[in-house]
Image (tube, rainbow over all chains, first blue to last red):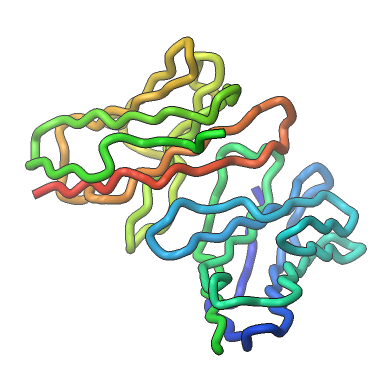
Amino acid sequence: DAKTTQPPSMDCAEGRAANLPCNHSTISGNEYVYWYRQIHSQGPQYIIHGLKNNETNEMASLIITEDRKSSTLILPHATLRDTAVYYCIVIISGYALNFGKGTSLLVTP
Amino acid sequence: KAGVTQTPRYLIKTRGQQVTLSCSPISGHRSVSWYQQTPGQGLQFLFEYFSETQRNKGNFPGRFSGRQFSNSRSEMNVSTLELGDSALYLCASSLATRAYNEQFFGPGTRLTVL
């Protein structure tokens, strides 16, 4: 699985967009980019995934660069409940996930 | 639809004992995965079962084992417990109809080894 690099922490004001970057420069052609988050003391929660194209769902948008070496998770209107650790995972199959250290996002009032 | 359930939620054991944790996946989900979360090592993949067969395995010693039943429920067992086995053990289930299905996680079992 490709290695990912994420900033250890980020802050975002409530109501603003939160843009979480992920670098995966060694990604191979058949590897997906997944995003999960873990709110304190709860099990991780799936957010979104993509292969080449940008993706959007009710929770977030995923922007993948054309060379697929990096991606950005966008939470369009962050709320206090979005405070969590966000994990970017690159993998062929979505099962044996390597979570890494993730980005701790703090949404402030 | 009910989510992934794990029992028990909390467990205290002593070194040398063994423990069995249980996971009931979301109805219709055929894949069950187990993860260990500790402050030092973070979230680590243990193993994944699909149709009663172990399909993927992480880098854990043989003291960690699991199984899946015909109704997709799964158990994991840790024998000869060590202090370092104290962790949150998470179970996740997936439809497994495609390679890229998302996983749904349960609340976890908090194991403390004294």
